[in-house]
Amino acid sequence: MTEKVDTTTLAFTWAVFSAAETLLGSLSRNSPKARSHAELMLDFIRVGKLGLPASHYVELMAEKYPELIAYKYAANRLLKTITTEQQAAE
Figure 1 (cartoon, one colour):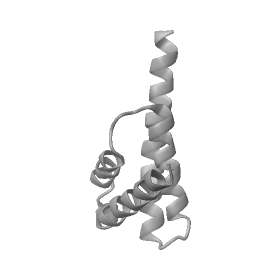
Figure 2: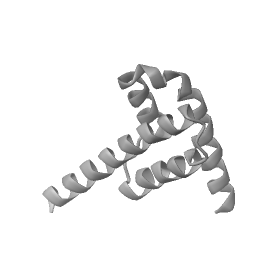
Figure 3: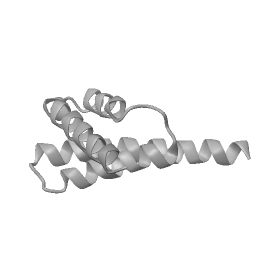
Figure 4: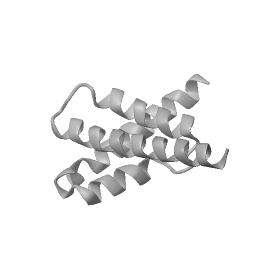
């Protein structure tokens, strides 16, 4: 059972990092899909029960890819907006 939990956590963690990278990339290209990427990222965090804020993953990906640092603020703002909307809908 422990291995399954660890594997699941690793899978969701990988997925969130991938979504964070994709979100930053889509913002850098002004892609209309940025919101979908942000929503997917938040879903991975929620379903995977990762316990860290979305901004954590955005920060780490921006550090890894310095060319995306300029989009960190926009990504965090979008994630906060979506989170607020989701909480209001509940």
